[in-house]
Image 1: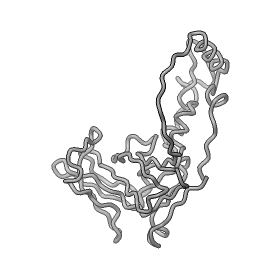
Image 2: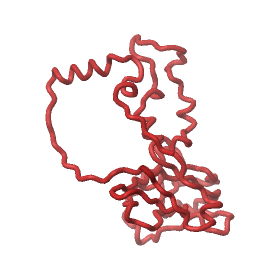
Image 3: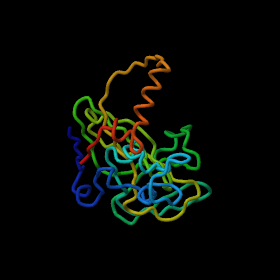
Length: 231
């Protein structure tokens, strides 16, 4: 399967950050997290397993799925009576503010403030027929001074720019540096879904639990996980 990123002009292709596999932006806290808790150098099962979340493949897959677009120029952010403002030194604009009337009543993440900005990254996203893209705040980067607002774009039919909206942390002042992860792009196949509700027997639940716990380390990763590839 192929996803295509189309630069709107030569400025985009030569200057602005291109979307790259999310796996290249693993956060430092994850890299520094030990495999075993409490300073241990080896596995211990007493009184419980000391393996940390470093071995949790669902967490890893969340952070490495899809592509990430970073900030292509430094932003100097100032705060004036609770309202954030941003400036840059490039000639081409890095962002633009969404009209206040269009975002009035939108509930922002706690600790963040208006205005809502649009990041002008300059890349058109194209996917095969039947595929859309989830565009969201980069997983694994919760403590950035900005927060991207989540949306879904039907990138197989839409040929325009999905200028991802974001807000800035209330009271933050300083430079948001070039290279900061701005948003994550996760392609997915559209389908129609209908929820059903059933009940598993206690015996079946016991057997499934026994299968899962028959491995001591990387239970999910070794027995259930399907490896994902984004290049």
